[in-house]
Length: 426
Ligand SMILES: Cc1cc2nc3c(=O)[nH]c(=O)nc-3n(C[C@H](O)[C@H](O)[C@H](O)COP(=O)(O)OP(=O)(O)OC[C@H]3O[C@@H](n4cnc5c(N)ncnc54)[C@H](O)[C@@H]3O)c2cc1C
Image (tube, rainbow, N blue to C red; front, side, top):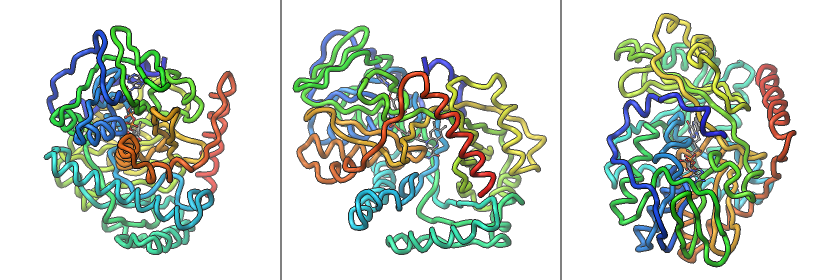
């Protein structure tokens, strides 16, 4: 069972805003909308709908933010994990531009919600995409030109010496800096959204795993102790949904990513690593991502894996990756190490759609959902309210399913190996 193996306590849990436990679903509850999953996707939809006066019930298998939303790198990214070209190839240039505009709107939405609901989640702006090979600089130039052409001009190319002033690592040969991307405390952002849902009159049930759904004209979701009957259903279980809704199972694949956090380094040592406290990610397919937390720890993520079992000593297995970037941290203690499941799609473009006229889903942000999940949740809410144009634009993207059965994991393992080799050669 996927959710059992990745259980190490995270830095985020240790620094979470206190939040009262929500009740477990018991008996029969009726609602206008039943939402499955209290991560960014489900809570975003729930918030929009509760604000619009709908009676909303959110069912969460574990606790709010238990999934990727409470354990991710916290990086607020621009655009889509697939890159713009794959979307353009499918939808054409004009609609691909609209998709990019929606991705930009997702960052704006995140900013507005944090501000209007006074969510204390350490939001900062500034982001460095760093290149592990000198020859990749031309790729950064092309990327900047593409972003300029899309009207996103808050970017800057940094040569190796310019980058060296900002980032104390010899590993990288230049960067594309973005002013319009950044980072936050992901769990506290998620808890803030949940607080906003409750304030708007929505109900959230924790420890209420949905074990069976009816996605027909009168949708319902059954747990071990109760059932929610609703007019609409929104499914936001993402990588953690497993086989709960069989039709969604093959659409995404869970990939594990791991994160470690050092002991507090102190202001001076932290600044000596990343001068302006910006978020950093390399441009590899299997990405290393890192940043300094508010309390001056280095938070370092990477090492994707196809297995859902945690390495026996996660901190020790991640440390060499961190010290390859920052050898000067060889002596520091690792205080936290944890992992989580990223839902990827075959083409790295998120997947959304309807299972019936009453039931919507969105998932597969492919490692880039902190901002995007918010807009997908909002667009599902718009569709429930009867305005589906923007949702339908994103739902037009076609996806090849992953195979089920015994070849599923070996296939992903070979894909990972392929991308590791590709990253090494590029
Ligand atoms: C380690 C890691 C690092 C990442 N780093 C970044 C990053 O830096 N930037 C970025 O943009 N994205 C990142 N991501 C991806 C990002 O976290 C996700 O795209 C995003 O959180 C998805 O939100 P969600 O609400 O769709 O899914 P989730 O947050 O996974 O929420 C799904 C929820 O549904 C619940 N659920 C599942 N099945 C059931 C059921 N049967 N009944 C009831 N509830 C159920 C789960 O318990 C879970 O709480 C990362 C992900 C991971 C795992």
